Image 1 (cartoon, rainbow, N blue to C red):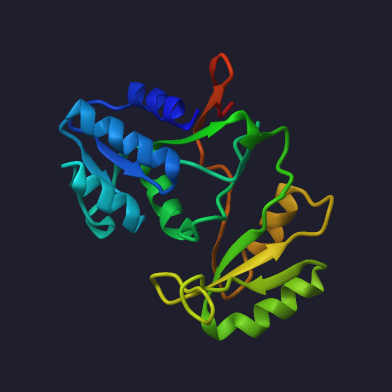
Image 2 (cartoon, rainbow, N blue to C red; image 1 turned 120 degrees about the horizontal axis):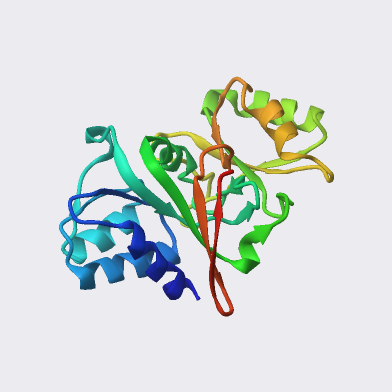
Length: 220
């Protein structure tokens, strides 16, 4: 299903384009397909693994700080709703993914039906990228709002997970019956939070692989 979904993305890619790529297994399939096509394109990605795969595939990769415009960008997600609000909590690179997304003419999610909800359920935690100096302050504020919050622990060392920018990743289990708009209101102006893993008014399309083909969710 993921490989098929990646295949649908090729319809949006033309030679000479600047292409943004996120992380994850669906994007890995897309990189493999791009290698087969041997198109003359340029790749920008916040993912170290995706960048490595692209270079191994012979694709030209440029650093993010050299880019100001992206023709089309592709990514996966943990959950997306019919209004194209999405949660991208797993990888912890959501801040840089948002930078690429907002530079792109088209920011397209590649998903299967299991990732699509009528409205976001927040069944996975909301992830915050937090300045280390604000760690205690943010925990107190989030708990005051009625949510649970913990630091994301590193899988490779005895300690917290930090981003490439030296910031903490903190996972928020949201209280039930909260809306996307409430989440935006509560967290978008919280001082000390660099970014959240909620993408709202950023995604332009979702290509959804179904049992018998695909469907496209587009911004109305």
